[in-house]
Length: 352
Image 1 (cartoon, rainbow, N blue to C red):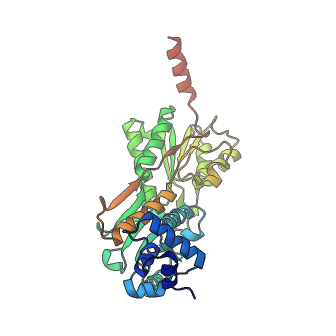
Image 2 (image 1 turned 135 degrees about the vertical axis):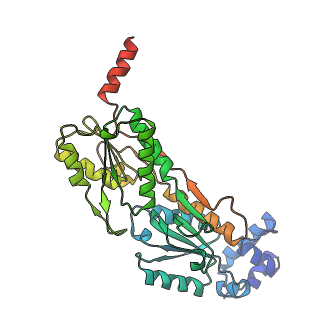
């Protein structure tokens, strides 16, 4: 078996220099590092991680503790962002998926401790608040897509749902829509409530009469096992004499149900009713005809930035803020049209 001494001899350096290159430590010139890497590749040297862990009490490994992420098509980009950061920074990733079960989560924490994991990225499928305190975390931890209800010291990385939703609602209002329905996400989800709060603030700022606004909950139930009532709710809206000219949806899954309800009612999108979503889950947003105007959740960035924050945390570096909020960009497509009244007003203005 090739040893570190064999690599050092082949590269013409000391054992310590080889160790520094393997561990991505500073104080090695680029030429020397290149020579060491060439010797490692030529000799097919595999570092002894167990020995390194005993010597340094560090594993160069981060753990990912998730509820449903690794089995969900919605949020797998978070994990991809973490893995891409880890590959670029010499970290190994150990993933544990708990399916939202407390006993599985406890077992995962024990496994992380047994393997001397350096830090943990605690990731949730939906942006929500957790009843978790610093005392519950035996290993340095950064929360990703979630925040703590009881502690303001646990670092987190979350999407800025409020700002993204505000941009979306203002876009719909700028198209001239005033008779608007809002179909909410599950009320237990903090991100969904932030989106709903932004909707209310935007229509209030635009002085839209309250009697023109309809609100309903589209999904309800335990997280990950919700029931979706959107189709029936949208069907009822479309059956009214004064139906909404635009429906703003808490996420793209809700928007899909609205599309189906509109199709069943014989309505065209966006000619008869405009529909917008949130998430930019592209299997839905690009698969629908017409394609869906929505807001993109920055899943990849959440994972990448979360891993970077965890590295700073375990390295003893300061964080500029405890809660880092990532922008959610507006994605304009074909499902939201200018109202006929707005078109006539614009035409009249041009004629004048």
